[in-house]
Amino acid sequence: MMNQYFATCPRGLEALLVNELKNSNAKDIKPTDGGVGFAGELSVCYHANLHSRIATRILMQAGQGKYATEDDLYQAAYKLNWPNWFDVKHDFMVKVTGVKCPLKSLEFATLRIKDAICDKFRQVVNSRPYIDTKTPAVRVHAYLTADSYVYYVDTSGDALYQRGNRKASIEAPLRENLAAGILQLSGWQAGQPLLDPMCGSGTFLLEAAMMALNIAPGLKRDFGFEKLKNFESDTWKKIKNTALKNVKPVTFQKLYGSDSDLRAVRVAKQNLTEAGLAEAVQLTQTNITEVVPPADNGVLVANPPYGVRIGEDEELALLYPKMGEALKRKFAGWNTYFLTNDLRLPKLMRLTPSKRTPLFNGPLECRLFEIKMVAGSNRK
Image (tube, rainbow, N blue to C red; front, side):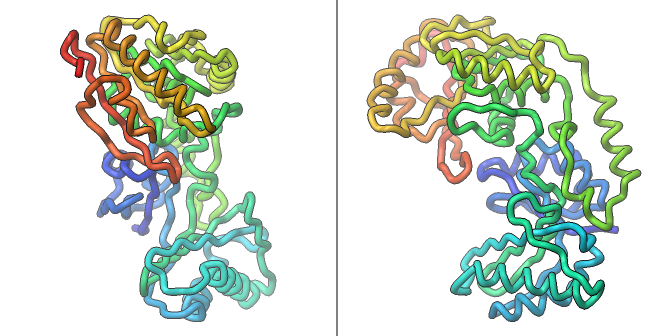
């Protein structure tokens, strides 16, 4: 049976998600801002959850229609047969998102939808499920526009960028699906040298190692769809077993990471080790201005520290020209990519970007600057 779905993703990566969904045999693919609608059988949903490096969540449509008031939302939710979706023993939560939504309080709308689901359970099975807003077994999403609603059941559970890999992090980490997207936007291919000279907790390196070794990002975690009544365990086993068979043995993959902070290098090493990927990557403690290129050409990706604390902006303003000098001196033949919310970066590095791609790291608007290091021609 064909179901309707919506996959959410970081804004700026929708086109990459479209390609992934095609690989999962999705039909009727419709990109929009911040996600992609598609249709498919449950196998498509399972495959996309397991294999998508870009999606944040994959939601299955449960109902849609028009509304004007909170009571309309209650009636619409009450009409749906929620006990067909999940068992009363599973706790659940409701999340409401509104765009141009006329209602005064989304919290009140959320409450009415919760009530409707609980009342439906009471009517059908004479008991109601518990609410858990922290770690629910089942998540229901409502998406409201000016006059229409869509109810979804979340097939992912925890957000898909939680790969079940990274245990430790330093400062605000880069989300895994954004890191994977940047690697894809850079054109980096497995087998090509990749360097992250500001590796932090190692997100770029983890994602690159998984890509190079053909490891599906969801192999180490479970999913929301496993708790739903329509779960097809045989279909899921086949999809997962195929993915397991396709994993390549862990060998060195020309992935290089360094950081000036020894603590960051240790955290990155710990994360790679726990993911079973330590052998794929070479790590060192080195300042970015002293990094030696590991090959004649390759891709350099970096997420430089953001000047969040007072005084850091000045420090960064001093660091960028030195970074630019080091790149010009040593990295001819490399394509470099910097994700930052500091739009002064290329100017301060005295380098000219060939591309500026707007991307969002959570709510933070950033730019991905592409700077191709051609011998002697990049000076301003």
